[in-house]
Image (cartoon, rainbow, N blue to C red; front, side):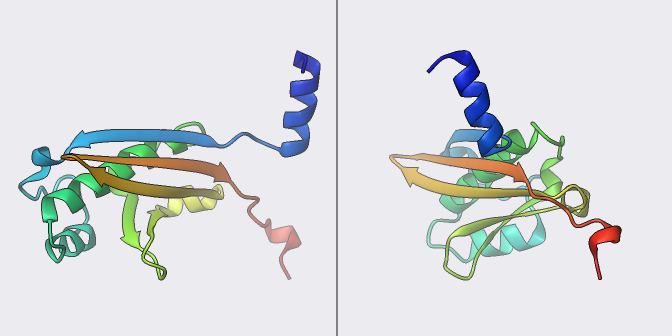
Length: 134
């Protein structure tokens, strides 16, 4: 496919989402750090069989989401909270500032052999304007 074909295809698909990845050594997260996580994140991790593994995974997820969102909006790590969704999968809750522009992110976390990793994708959904709202 030539450059014009790729450009036309992307135009039909819409904006290409932002992508972020992070990998960390689990042992780095042996001790909880209130500067890195929200109260809810720390409480969740403390209840897990391996809190350090859980903290490492949550940290990777926050970093991956931050990187994915950077295409649209620079977020601080305190503006990103990783929680467990209804299905048990991790979900990324973003700040009100992100919601105002329609920024959303999906994240996946994995652990193996003393390492944690996460991958995230972010995109902007159309935010309804006041004119279009009943």
